[in-house]
Length: 344
Image 1 (cartoon, rainbow, N blue to C red):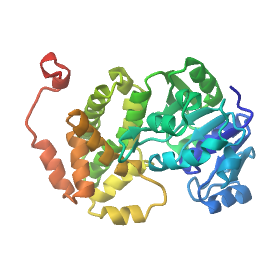
Image 2: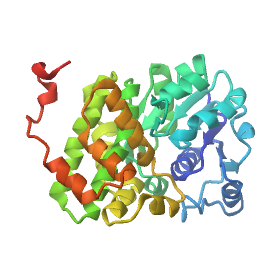
Image 3: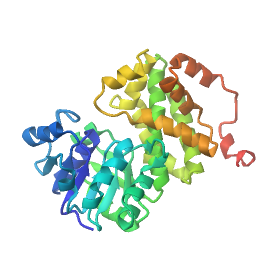
Image 4: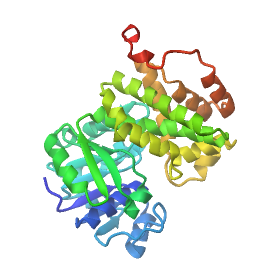
């Protein structure tokens, strides 16, 4: 494993921040931008004005819209495309990715239609050892704060301890700490589903509700994430860590959260189509809500918050009515899903 050349595939805010983080540690980083104008911005102004405005990028970050050229010869390939296009983008790059490369997925979401997590998509697009040893980066991190050097801790999951150790050293620095674990499913689900709960928290804030409401949504949202995660093979303890509770709290409370912002605007009465049309960056939770509800139905797991968010997004249900319906559900024991009598 080597990091003589690092490729970062995806020049949104998070991809750009990771590219800059790695470049500032002395690595040669090649950043792929889907939009040629973004690559030109970075090359000419040393700044991604479209997605990470106001932050000067390290000189070792080289941007290009030529995907093959970016990944060719890279020892490490960091995939940061929106989750719904990861299959297409990595599929285009597959032939140029070296057979001994280490792939790191930093995309948070579930593929609609197939309902597959990113590790499943990566292994299908990059069959063999490259896909099998891939790692998955998640946890509480706003791109703008990572770029500013705000102390940050994240989680990284891989089934290969050697890959975990290599990447922990590669990414860690004075302001960026990496914790490793081998629960790939738990880390991926935590990173994906927190965006659904963040939409709910934003709706609550947009309706003018207070801290009590937000705390309830975060806590019961974590219960939903854990239920689905365990049904899909994740470890319950993973959701108490950075990729679970940590990322959930950040995304549900932080003003930099795109998903919380979308929820707030819905709560204030705006239409989803108008909100999305006004945004250049992707709010992953909108698509992930569809997959979360479908996955819950497939495995027979109850996710009332996710379902009400889906109703608001796709059935234009009145947000206040959705909250009222959540509050009006039949009472139950808080940890009923963990009691022996309720286990399948």
